[in-house]
Length: 262
Ligand code: PEP
Image: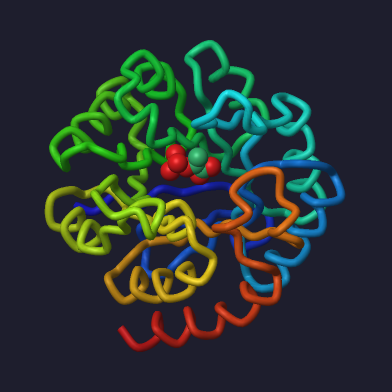
């Protein structure tokens, strides 16, 4: 039987978002929480266009140690403030087992990033909570390794696991990652867990986020996770893959059209 993960979200009728149900759920927001103004501007805009879950990194896994690594707990507090103001549920990354309890105080969904997909101590720890967990696909992981990582969380008793296709590492450098749309229908065959799609990390390119979002919806994704920034060219992190508020607004009706057609 397919798993449906329920996430409390005050901005929807009934107060619960269902991931893995019949609707494509929209999760959107900045890659990284940079400031109150940046977060609130983005949250207001994505909520207006129909997002019900707000994304934003407070603890950022940065490839370079000199990149912006997030505001830490201060960022989590801003996310909680945005939830109070706009009613959206919060998804944010947790990077270490010792941070899990603290991140749980603020987040509605715990995100495990691609670099931590096989951090088994972290998987055990989020498994001991009952919070929904988005488990990103390791950039070089096989499907078997990814599903076994999910089993780590499930085997601790947390049944609320959502898988996320976010691109894989290939020889190609024109895109940051190679978005593997086939993962969406394949996971639906291999697993009962919901599968969502992150076309921002999946491509690393703002111009590809729209087409890959539509392709993901056509392939059956249960949700989209999209990075949006009021001024991507000034973003402290990953501006190249963040769409503008205007681009996000233009994309939403196209997503609805594809969702209605399948
Ligand atoms: C993110 O979504 O902020 C992120 C870092 O994603 P990934 O782990 O897929 O690179």
